[in-house]
Image (cartoon, rainbow, N blue to C red; front, side):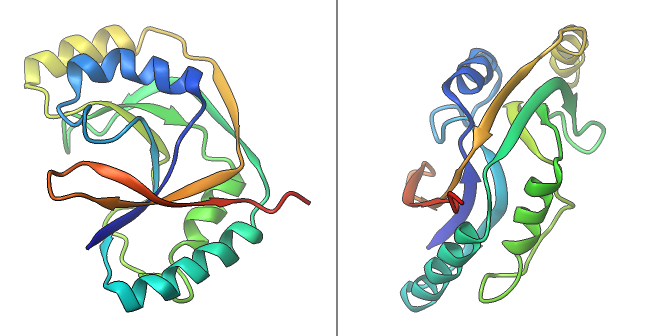
Length: 170
C-alpha cells in the first residue's frame, strides 16, 4: 500500500488554499490542502508496524513550530504548479530530515520545498495568467503545527488519515 506523511495547516490556511484549488487543482477532491513532509512510499503490514513506531518516536522528539505562508511561488519551468510558499523554519526542515532516517524509508526524489499546492496541471497560458495575478497578492497567514499525519492512498486515488502523531508538549 502507498503511504505518505503530511501536515494539515489551520482552517484559515486550508480555506485560502481551497479557494484556488477548487478551480485550479484536479486533485482537489483527493486530499485536503496539506504540506507533504514525506513523499509517498510503499509499505506492507510488517513494515508499517515499524514505521508507525518510528513516527511515534519522531513526533515525541519534535516541538510545536510556526507554519507561515507569506507568498505564492511555483515550480515553473519544471511543472506548471503554483503553491503557497511555507516559510522553511528550522524545526520544519529538521522534521523532514528526521522522517528520512532510522526505520523510515529514505527515498527522497526531490529536495524538500515546504509548500501547499493550490494549482497544478495548468496549460502554459493558464499558468501564466493565474501565477501572474497571484504573485501580486500578499499572503500573511500563520498557525502552529503540533502534529503530523500518516496518510494512505485508497484505490480511487484519494488519501485518508491512517494515524495522527502529536508532538511532544514539553
